[in-house]
Image (cartoon, rainbow, N blue to C red; front, side):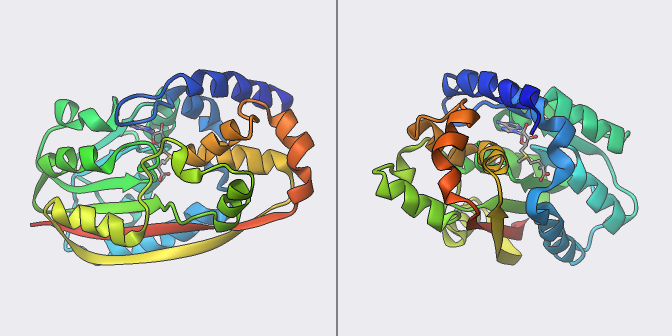
Length: 277
Ligand SMILES: C[S@@+](CC[C@H](N)C(=O)[O-])C[C@H]1O[C@@H](n2cnc3c(N)ncnc32)[C@H](O)[C@@H]1O
């Protein structure tokens, strides 16, 4: 990783520690900074997830669907939807990061970019969508707050496609943390605890499941830069770096934790489609 990238992360980490808000964690600066390299896809996770999203979306009886992509990032899922459905109706991409939205707009020029919090979509996006994407946003935003907003933007019979990492991820990292008396539950996070919990919350918000899968992907980190960077992008996991007193200090992390290399662990991801009843 370039030195300039590391010092940017240091600065942002310090800001981020003081940016915690009510029902979401604020990280627009972080995503502005990593937008240029976001599509690098460490460990090919997104490629694998997209394969499952593809299988799920192809089951839907939709033609030129109108889409709201919440936490749209660089717009990869919109491109996927275009490949699957051929043409798309109106597409709104909601994100707090200007730079991520810029990348999405370049990839899909008809996009309506909306720079806003996911928890304010009802104020910014018209109702009546066929499909809402919530992909890798739930580490940052309370699903209990998000679901009513999403339901209000979907037409009856419309669908949500959800992909989210789960709190059961990183079993080895979490047990390592506990050995140092760091409790992973003590960090502020909204990440769903399990597929079962996520399903239950979605169903009690008025949706029924169409299809879902949980994938468990092994990741092997050969150097501390990759480990630090990946942890940083994982939202809640990053806060463990704070507890280790390595937040904003990748050099200290590298000095003190290189003995765990190569570090292998698992990420658990729920991918599902749910229909509004
Ligand atoms: C892990 S990325 C996922 C991007 C995309 N959905 C994907 O699957 O590739 C998370 C995205 O959510 C955005 N984000 C984080 N917190 C947000 C919030 N409270 N409201 C809206 N967007 C948010 C970030 O800026 C980032 O672009």
